[in-house]
Length: 274
Picture 1 (spheres, rainbow, N blue to C red):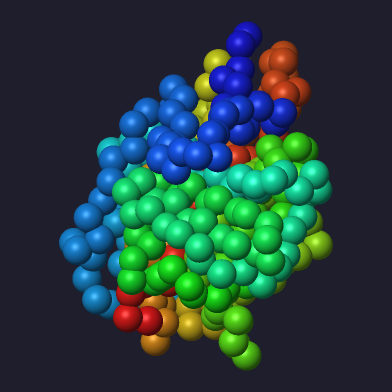
Picture 2: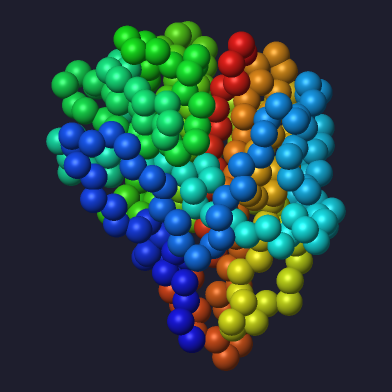
């Protein structure tokens, strides 16, 4: 059988050619379906309100109740919660961490341009809302991790204060945190939760949509892709999941060796006013 290369372990990130003179670029779209944006204005102002069919909780929940049929049928898309980090010039390394300043920004589609002591960094963020969270001249602490020729990427942007306040973070990988760094997205922890959209896997349909649970000391909420929620108090965050898949790669009689166990694309953004 032919496996969708978007979900094959060695082909998660579609090669994209970027000109250093051009800011605007569109997020990649495979055959996962078009992302349907959800208006955050429809969310209530409670501690946590999810815009998907997955439940919201105040405590841990590894296996959420099954979501609605419509929510499970809505196809995931890498354009939701999408990001792409480009170094100019290229760093030739998997990891990078530095004190940086916001040199420029574009709002639609969202691009953040950083100057990290002479090292240029461009972060494309699709539909992320950068203003008023960022302004040109802001100082930020940038931490970037990657694997497999940047096939898997994780990053955070924090305030350079004593609390290292998380401003913006993203993951596009087969695990929700880098190896050996479970607190990379602190104060948030993300875990995979199966059972929201149960399937009977076959060789032709081995991928199950799952939820992602976001938790911190104030509670937890579950988000089913492709959707987002506002959650947290007193600091509120937009928690956005574009892709979360469990791949049944060991089905008898199936050639699914190229599949990873999971695929994730998620983003965390500090909400305005927090």
